[in-house]
Length: 109
Image (cartoon, rainbow, N blue to C red; front, side, top):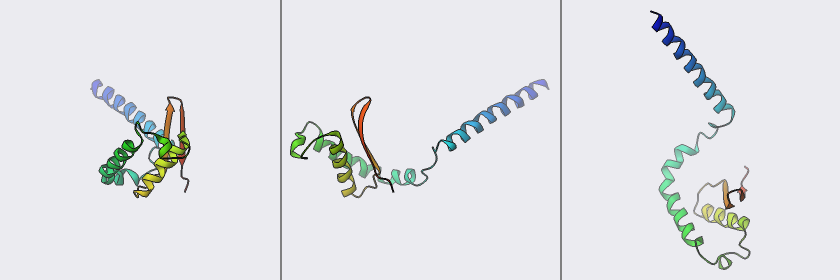
């Protein structure tokens, strides 16, 4: 009988831990986007094709031919414009120059 009390106590402690983790995740905003994940699955192939096409345009190419001043910021703008032209609802583009150095464009709606 004491084993049952022990298991019930352990299960309550585990349940409280998971409840705490869930509340912390909700407060940090992890579950705020309830629309994009369901739609992302539908357009994943198209986004991969558009990303591959952009990669082909930019990888090991002379960027001076694509844009006037190829900085990380202008590359962000170029990628944002290309994806928006392909009718993707992109709200943020980030280009890394190094592990701790990047340029980012966000669209605030």
